[in-house]
Image (cartoon, rainbow, N blue to C red; front, side):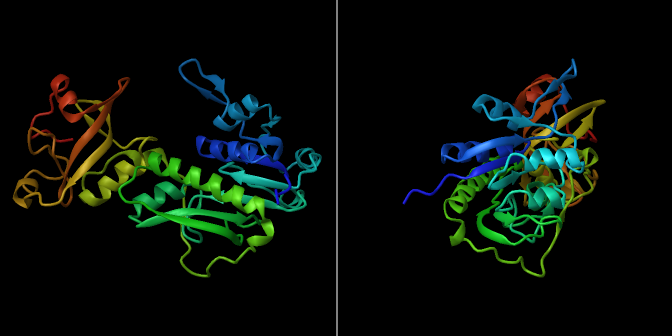
Length: 312
């Protein structure tokens, strides 16, 4: 039996959300509106750039709403006026007040990129990598007033396994699209189950200051930082007054401590740009100078020498 299409309001903003919106359309649901955060200034000219979700929704012919917030009675009335069966939320970025949560007859479902209750909040993918989690995943969650506290209808896990935030975001986005369409095809088959009472952690928003590499940290922590902030904001260090992003690096597990300790953390210890850390060392693989494309360490060193003994 073919499932009955639902009338859906979709709410999302970044690229992570786009495959989920597309999956709803491809499954034959009627997306009556797409909510996204307003266009932001971007580029040198600071022109207003629509979010990835707004751009895709407009391409698909879905009406787009970009309110600054949803707390006014006018915004809530406009939301309710769509008469949707359900709202699907994926990294929208704004808190939904109770009148919005209550407006669709079947409530609001969220695609959350962690294994709840671990990493509730804004940056679950980056925090999972930074913490060294072995696994992460996606939960389809019934939304309520608390921050990612609602019961879970369906979840699936995947190994972190050395992935960057960019690679993991793409994987979890596709997973979320698949899980959400499965749930919407037969809501009765996925009764909501309360989250576990322990194991809760909070995934705070990533601050720009976190991207600067502190070489006094261990090589394990720095390698995680590099992956967690690839592609954005990009982990970085300074050399000769220039900021260089470090996009990929390997940890030198058996680095001789006699090489690293005399120089101190942040010292380049060989001609391959191996860098001493608080414990151990890392060797950059892919870097990016300001205004240039990504390049290997060998490519960077040919045009921008960083000799052994340099302190970063």
